[in-house]
Length: 230
Image (cartoon, rainbow, N blue to C red; front, side):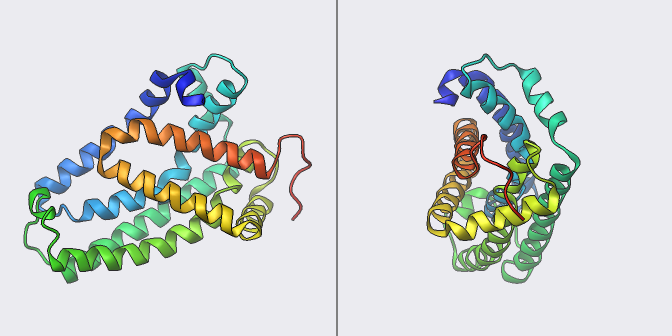
């Protein structure tokens, strides 16, 4: 298992995003809008693909039983071609759209009354309604983004396809193996969302799921196979 090969480095990289998540939760608690944390946890699935280059670099090292270093993470991001950064920008843009929509929905359904994390645990009716409808919105955006990015970002990272062919290949792979791929997507979403709410878990689950995503991609598009057709 790649995580077990170098757990400190893997968890150390994940700690950067765990710390950012903690900072966001502190801000939400201070502002009295704790229910938005549920939207942020779900929204992490939208921005997640933009973080994969570093984990891809570590995975490639560990898969060949080589010692990985923090410099490999930097080299992973440097390796990402322009098309990969375009996809990452799209991920961040959709995340911002999602959070904006969630904020508007929160204003309509919960209002300006302060709601901290202690009160959030009561799961009142208005908060439950907000979580339900925001989850539906987020699920639609997450599915679209997953379809276009699940395989396109690793294809771009490995320079096996340019932007448009990579996106087409990703969509084809998702719909061509819909049951298997969507089962993985649901598992990925559940694990990451729960981990984002229980932040220390993210130190382990984020690198493990990133490495597993890399392995799934290599099963669908083996490294010795020709580039995917358009």
